[in-house]
Length: 150
Image 1: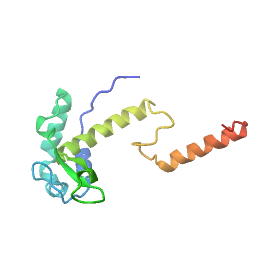
Image 2: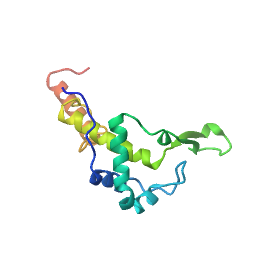
Image 3: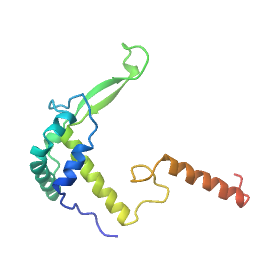
Image 4: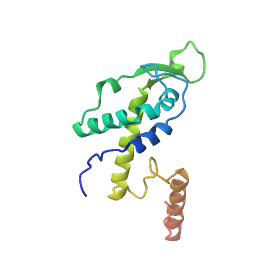
């Protein structure tokens, strides 16, 4: 196996990551949301691509993207009982784009080097819970075929 190395990303990939952001009405710590970023995507895609490539080449994740706002998210029950809430972190929209780029490259590296086990279904392209259930069912049936009932 070779070592993972970041490959310079092209603007078209960054644009695709921007387009695939979930449309949210909430704002990040800088007052931005995905809808705003999508509306100016053509104007920012080239400088953002340059920033991503420089950051990855230097091995530095910009400090401004490490800031999160932690807020309580109500689950159920009485509103005035804090135990009925869980904390969530509102991350900067731009850090989510970085994350998507990194995930794409790491997944590609793992796939091309056969580093995933056959039982890894989560976070993989064209893999789902249905695949996991099918594999589990086949494993049970194979056990029955050889008389292993434990």
